[in-house]
Image (tube, rainbow, N blue to C red; front, side, top):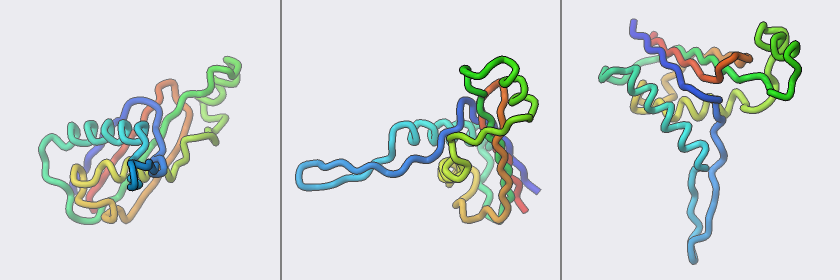
Length: 139
């Protein structure tokens, strides 16, 4: 059984909707810069974790942990409560958009295509350091 784990530093970013721009008589689409830079960060972390191994070509189970920092505007007491699991993050980034960005970035690096994911578990919690943790297991 093959397993790969990696950490993506920084606040998780949800995949943004494509943007449209008029270029003369043509309309082009492009990925928002924030989304593109986060996906590149995911690709770097995933490629480093793979250490030159071949992509997984069968079904995979994926666990993703999204960790965000409590707002600085909160009192120290409220921040401690959040870090101890008493308060859950219900603000952005959205879980589903984060999953899309991470999955798309892992294509052709960790797995051939994200359609290979047959099991998925995701959590979003407060932590002192913002990051995303990804664990992929071939099944």
